[in-house]
Amino acid sequence: MAETYDVIVVGGGVTGASLAYHLARRGLGRILILERETLCAGSTGVSVASIDLLAHHATAAELQLRSLRAFQHSHELYGDECGWVETGMALLVAPAAADGLRAVAATVRAAGGRMDLLSPGEFQAVEPACVADDAAVVSWAPEGGYVDPVLLTNTLVNAARRLGVPLRQGDPARTLEQAGGRVTGLRTGAGTLAAGAVVVATGPWTTRFLRASGLEVPLRPNRHSVAVLAGPAAASPRISFLDGLNLIYARPESGGLLLCGSLDEAIGNDWVEVEDGCPVPAQDYGYWVAERMIARCPGLEQGELRKGWSGLVTMSPDLQPLLGALPLAGLYCAAGFSGQGMKIAPAVGEVMADLIAGDAAAAALLQPLRPARFAEGAPVPTAKLFGTLG
Ligand SMILES: Cc1cc2nc3c(=O)[nH]c(=O)nc-3n(C[C@H](O)[C@H](O)[C@H](O)COP(=O)(O)OP(=O)(O)OC[C@H]3O[C@@H](n4cnc5c(N)ncnc54)[C@H](O)[C@@H]3O)c2cc1C
Image (tube, rainbow, N blue to C red):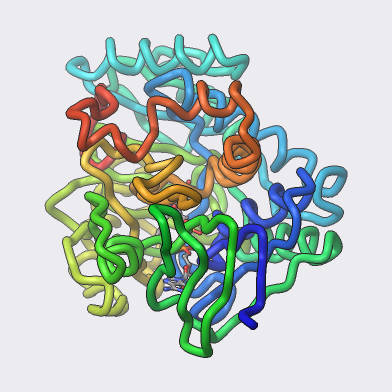
């Protein structure tokens, strides 16, 4: 007889880890995390993991605020740390995006978050390493920061393990088993597993995996390149920022480093196939980012470019994730985070577990992000601010 679980979570990234912990905590029976390779083998292991608090709609703002509180209280909630570092997060925009940014700040505040609007001069007082005279307005979220994505995932998996959830690594799910219009389990590299429900948290592999069972989702992998700079301490920003004028972002890293990258759709963000791999970015990309970083933080002229890396993000057409039921009873999706899944991972696991348990409030909260919205012609109306940002 096949091994039997109540819920199988496919994918051992931060989303799968959070799902597994919250499903077990809610007492939803025997849970399994099934991972094709090793924990954090996908986007999670290479994430910049900035927590920017940028949100265009109420559901996104609530997922972020709930997740922020989880990062801040990781030890109490999950029994261990997640590497939370509060740096504050600024977002600088040109006049054309100023109204959009004011709307974002209002959405974040309505959800209970802090996001102030500063003049360029006020911002320079917050971060003297930056010049900002070209910005129309700057938002400042003092509670923004970053996490350690691998530590967070391991902390969640260990919390799930303490609740009896096994992690099976090195065993890819191949296809879904189905009967009578519902999912009944999975065929894996090693055999067949029976399940009452399956949650697909397979990141950039999601389209490929579901297609093997005759299901389509509009998700595509995009390869994002990260540049690493080392600047003189006095000239390096201590805050994190998103720069809508130069189309770059940066956050501090330990060892005096800065993790930076492009927010320009045409530079360092390339449509690829999931098997294309993630090479070290070309030196030209590092120079492109460094030039714009120096324009924003002139003292970085004395800095050095270090080796960067690249990783796959999973893009959806409206830059919002697909969270909820798929058109096969018992099958759920948590993917398509469009480069922004770290900042909401704790709440995604919690609210999806509630949804699977039949909780009406969770269903209402996630309704705008239901996977069926594209087939229904009702994507989330995204007031995109600039570049790759949703
Ligand atoms: C370079 C980069 C920078 C980023 N920066 C940020 C940021 O600053 N802030 C932010 O919020 N987000 C950021 N993100 C996005 C964020 O990291 C992702 O949204 C998040 O890690 C997604 O986690 P996941 O668990 O959904 O997917 P993944 O981490 O991709 O995990 C999916 C897992 O599923 C496994 N899998 C796939 N197929 C199968 C199968 N058939 N059977 C079993 N297992 C399978 C994979 O091996 C993988 O481990 C960034 C991403 C990248 C790549």
